[in-house]
Amino acid sequence: MAYFTHPLDILNKYMIFRFEKKCIEVVVKALNLSEKARREGLLALEESINEETYKDRNIFYYGMRLIIDGTDASFIDKLLSNMISHEKNKQKKLLKELQKQACLLIQEGTNTRLIEIMLLSLLNDKMAIRIKKYLDENIIKD
Image 1: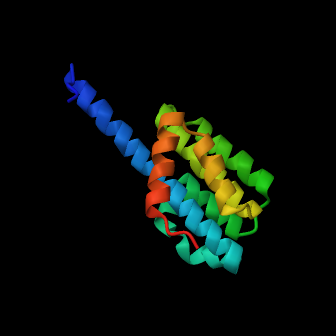
Image 2: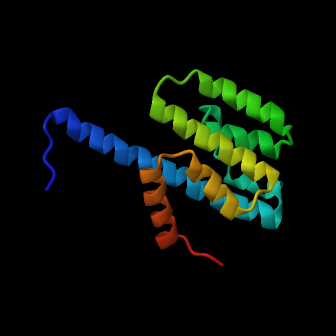
C-alpha cells in the first residue's frame, strides 16, 4: 500500500490520473474521427464539432473546424502552435500539442494505427504504455 507523505501528494496523484484521462479522450476522439474521415470524407466530421468548444478556442475543435473549412495544413500548424505557445502549464501544453498533432494527422488522412503510434510517442513511456493497454482493452477493432 502506498502512503502519501504530504497532502499535496494526493492532489498530484489525482492530477496525473486526470491528465491521463484527458489524453485518452483526445486519442480516442482522434481515432474515431480519423476513421470516419477516411470512410466518409472530412466534411462528414462537421457534425462532430461542438461549436461551444470551438468558441472557447479548444485546440482540437478549433483545428478540426479549420480542417473542415479547407484551411491549408501549414497555416493550421502555425496558428495552433501560436495558440499553444501561450500556455504555461506543462501538462496543458502537452495536451494541446497532442490535440494539434491529432488534427494535422486526421487532415493528412493518416492511417488510424499510425495516428495512435504518433500520439502516444508524445507521451512518456509509462503513460503511453498505460494508454495503449486501455486502447487495446476497450477499443473495438474491425
